[in-house]
Length: 126
Image (cartoon, rainbow, N blue to C red; front, side, top):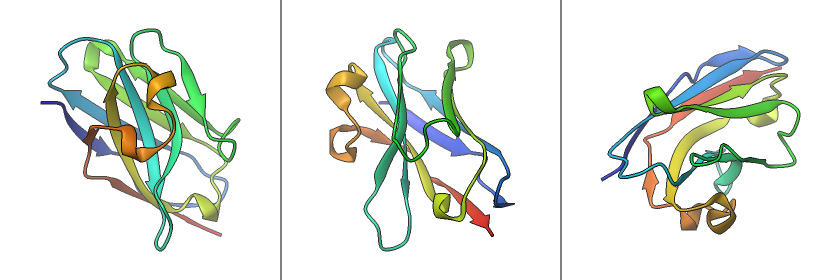
């Protein structure tokens, strides 16, 4: 059973930066797609970024390209989301999720992911 624990959420001013962490346990192998999702009040959960643990290939939503960077530390079984140039519209609960397989198969949609963390809140004020 894969378990995911997010941390790093905070309240920041627009233009600021944050780094979210997702600590994973229970992996059976290295071939997982790890995704970051976010959900703002009244909105659907959307995919932000994802990384394939096997190759390190990364994928981003257009809304965060050039501002967010997803990375991994295999020794720590941790995936990071470095967020820069934050905007008020980035305010949301951020979730880490895992899919056993490639990110090509997983895609950006939440329904394909099997495992979820509890979320960490990011609030960006103008």
